[in-house]
Image: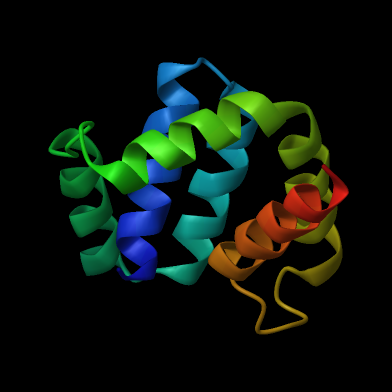
Length: 104
């Protein structure tokens, strides 16, 4: 699974649960990270995403259960690391998933 697919899934879920702050942060990151062609593909992936896949179901449950931690964490990472590091949003989400899984 590539970064475009992960971003499309997370953006679609944030729109579905009406978490506009997370959606804006993810879209801003995408606009900065991806070329115009990749953004076009991202919009297509968002429009045609399959919501019955195991990954989508997992991410939906995880984002819904951890939305209070994700948004401030993503905003912090976006503010402090955007353009200063090669950290990708997928690695940020993965590290947050692992840290929250270990905390529980």
